Image (cartoon, rainbow, N blue to C red; front, side, top):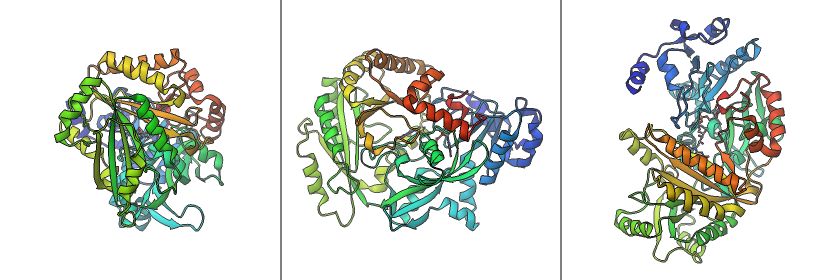
Length: 531
Ligand code: FAD
């Protein structure tokens, strides 16, 4: 398969000489699609590249791939489908870092947003394009002082680099920055900043969207608000995001990054919940970032997500893990700049004074702001060099109400996970505050003021991902049986009943918005909500 793929990749041909590969699109479509000249590709190499994703579990082939060089290309494609008596499916594909085919479009057309990004970057001489790829800065005298207008096809690393050049930064991130703005805003975009600033979707002022009817619309809380709230966390169902106006703050320079180890889950969660209770946006004593993870018997306590622990400490940590089976690792960070340089150590000391970690197991690092935010990248490059980045990833991400987090620890971490002894993965666990989310948006979260995210970020071999999937099923079944009303993050369901349950009281609105903005159900079919 791999060698076939590689040789196919070298033979990518444009649509014009490969119409025979479009058998499943409606007959009259090829003539319509000639409109796109060499931007539409249907050769096996092009098709293969978008028929899989980071999850590497699902495989769905589209009939063609659009490599747009302008927003007009996307607009014309959606219009062609919408106006056709036999509409075809269309999926925007950002970085394709979905896990279960969410950015795929079987027999339809995948819009490769990375091509748009490349085109914008390679055409810097064209002033219109430059404005698109570089962030455009604005100041407002109102509540939010600075923001950047960024393309939906841009990666968060692009946004961070461009904004930092001007001394600014977004406030809310994902752990990994090589994801597109459009892709993460279609989910939520969570990380250790979420407890304080909300998810990425809570930090957007305005969007440009091409809807499922092929209309280009600008929307915000005060203009076309129904579309604005639909699209944020909307799983790509209502339109393709082509521009997002992202809130910025002055960028800090450096980060004090701390990890504390616990053998007691109740002390661990008590400390996490205490730290996230200090969460005012302007509150100078608040942490800037809080996460947590499980350390289990995996050889090294470091992993691809971050290489934190110094080698001189690893033996000590490993023996602790061996003794307790699971060690809970609280991760907290405080940003600083020239102004706060003299006070940051004292602030951190105050913040961590009452923590209940195991004495002697607090570890500190001092890194640049960029190094901190981009901390996953070195691990990715290491795995890529070993050919281990593109293995199957049977991940499961959940939101769990605070009231059930002890049941979750007892029944799942200390029972299912330990018993199964599947250790090839990272398990994240950290809380966030519901009041930092906007309930008008499509994203679905638990109905409690504090809820946890747990991410089973597992890598497997090509033959054994089913073991992990089996464990994921056990986890979901346990929650069902124990009455733990979890929500999946980056959800993957196969039946309408499951989707209705997932969205709960939002389901009706979600369907009405679909009827309004994508009545022919063209967009993001790989989510399998309306298909
Ligand atoms: P894709 O996978 O390409 O697309 C996702 C969905 O959005 C699809 O339905 C697609 O059709 C739709 N879509 C894509 N672009 C657009 C657009 N412009 N407009 C409308 N719809 C669009 N998530 C977090 O929240 N926090 C994390 O810390 C985090 N870390 C991750 C680390 C890794 C290594 C990976 C692989 C994923 C991580 N994720 C994280 C999950 C990630 O946010 C989602 O998988 C996201 O969808 C990936 O973005 P993408 O650009 O690859 O989107």
